[in-house]
Length: 226
Image (tube, one colour):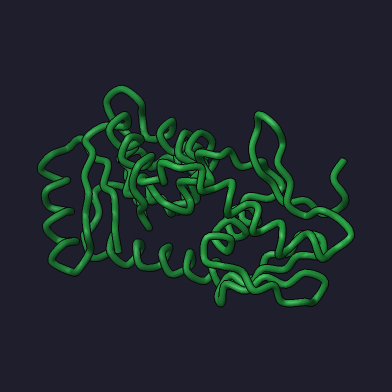
């Protein structure tokens, strides 16, 4: 499991990293919010351990940016010495999944990481439904009007991203990142894969489910294109 630790207390950060790596985790580290957001924009993590009292951008704002600007659903555990109810509520409103007051024991942090990661894996097993479309997250199978659509791998990734983000529009850069990470192809490969997806999942039917909004991006929709 790959975990990002965002903590400005170097001694605490070293203890967490040593313990977590000894128990089998892959750890990356950022000592402030700006560095964390850069890492999160270019790499994929299953869990972020995020301190609230960071210099510059505090943990609440970092959490909001992860959810609203980067649009990531990565699991987040906030660490803080603030144990008041209003602080905890602020954390959950910002988008955190869990909240661990300082001081804490390292084994408790580990089991909390395991718990929210496990919840994330369970979420990946659910079926997504939009109009005639149903996507089996666990097995990577798309159905339209009950008919299974045999998709190539990249088209499958496109469908997964669009249905997870429905009803939002997904920009080209966001879609390319979901498919190829931080190494997108130099050619306009997305256009070719989009054509293949439309050919397989739209053309045999009466209405469009996969549409492009000029200047905005890509989306999946329930009914006919407006």
